[in-house]
Length: 349
Image (cartoon, rainbow, N blue to C red; front, side, top):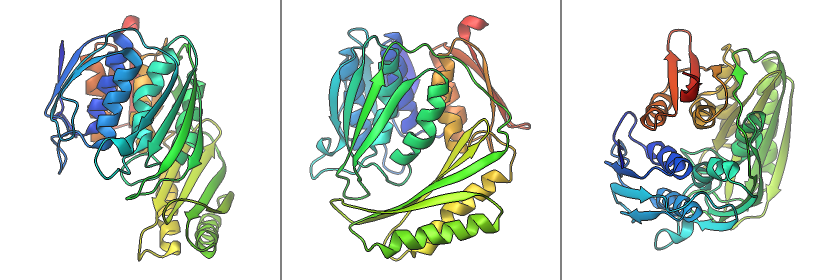
């Protein structure tokens, strides 16, 4: 049994997700304590509980402590990872439903299923575009394309938008099994090719996405950037709005977003996302701060050493590196001064 302190570093749900993925992949039983101790509301929330159940389903794990609010979990895989058709619904994890992030459940099961033999289809229901988690648009436009370069064959299809607090979104994840992961070198990002964007609303007037698109195009063009922003009005179970931008460089991708809320003008939503993108563009980093910690796990399982530059070293990054090293799979070296991360799989040492 590998014991993992859930309060280490930033003390959030990422410790749980990475541990579950690696337990499923390695077959190593784990015990996590102090789960999400660094959060205002500690313990398993709906999306974390769904991630536990999803990881357990794909490797027939025996689980103790899988209930809302639990700060302790034991997880013992019972078999190798089984490819197949699965449905994981965050809204079922708590009474009255939940807009818990489906992206976090996706990131828990994606790599195990990609390494398994056979193809998988996973239906995910809950929040697709919610605060404090990767929007599904980011997963589609940045995360999965970068993972594809590492050998992961997967795609997502957004069936319904799910905003906070109602949720109600649905995503189909298709994964081709048998992936062999290779390392990447993302030290130089190269020249910016273009910025692509999506300004979207559900159950709101069509002038709102148009205003977000127009404002963001003006801001980006004033900064000298080539951009194309699409305005889209879609159907959903509740009102919602957001702007999602992806910066396409010669050698890399980066994503930025802002979500609307009651009382926040469309132009302000556009400004928030554009400011984040322009701030990143002024650096020389190849990887945005969110992708920086999200790619650590696949790189730790790759067949060769990897290196990348990032905008800042976050506690999310250093915490995820610590979890990976607990499993003895890779050595992660973070050069804070030069903002370079080096990931060396253990068998290469």
